[in-house]
Image 1 (spheres, rainbow, N blue to C red):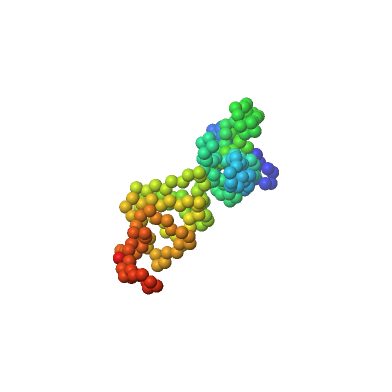
Image 2 (image 1 turned 30 degrees about the horizontal axis):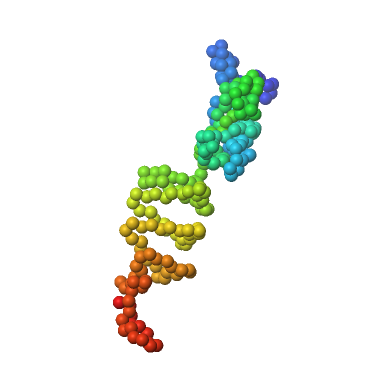
Length: 249
C-alpha cells in the first residue's frame, strides 16, 4: 500500500508491483507470514520458581522483531501463560524451572491449545485460530551464560558442582564404589543414633589426636605400640602392698 507523501507502508515492498509474478509471490508470502513455527524468546515472568510444585507457565517475549515492506521493524508484544517443558515421567522429575532473563526456544501449535491447557485432558480446540503465537510452548534455554551450579557429563566422568548445600533426602542412601571412595572436606561430621563402620581387612585412622567422648566397648584385642591394653594384657613386677605394677607385657 502507498501512503501519499509517506512512501510505502505495510508488508508490501516497491518491487511487489512490478509484475504479476511479484504480486502472486507477495500474496503467498503474506499467507505464510501468518504461520508461527518456532522462534527465540526471552522469559519475562515465571509462575513457578523452584520447589516441589506442578509445572507452571512463563510469559515470553519474541526476540526477532516484525518487519514491514520498507524494512521498518516493530517489536513483538509479550506472549502470556505459555506452558514450559519439564523433564518428568509420572511422579519422577528434574525440577529446573526457567528464570527471568533466560533465552530459549518457543514453538507454536497448529491449533488452539487453550481447552487442553485448562482441562489437562483431550478436548476440542478452543477456537479456529491456527499456527498462532498465542499457542506457544517454551522448550528451554539456548544462548545463555556460564552456569555456576551444574551437573557435567564428560569423557572423564560426572561432576556435580554447587555453591550451596547439596542434599540427598531418602529413606536409604547407598554410596557404592568398586575401587575407592574418597571424602575430602574441611570438616567431616556424622550425626546418627548408630554409626557402623565395617572393614573386611582393616581400618586405619591417621590423625594427630583422636578424642572420644564416651565409653569404648570392644570384643577384640586393643593394642598400643604393639602391646595389648585391653583385658588380655598382663603386668611385670607384681607384688603385694602399695607399690605400682610394671609396664604391660
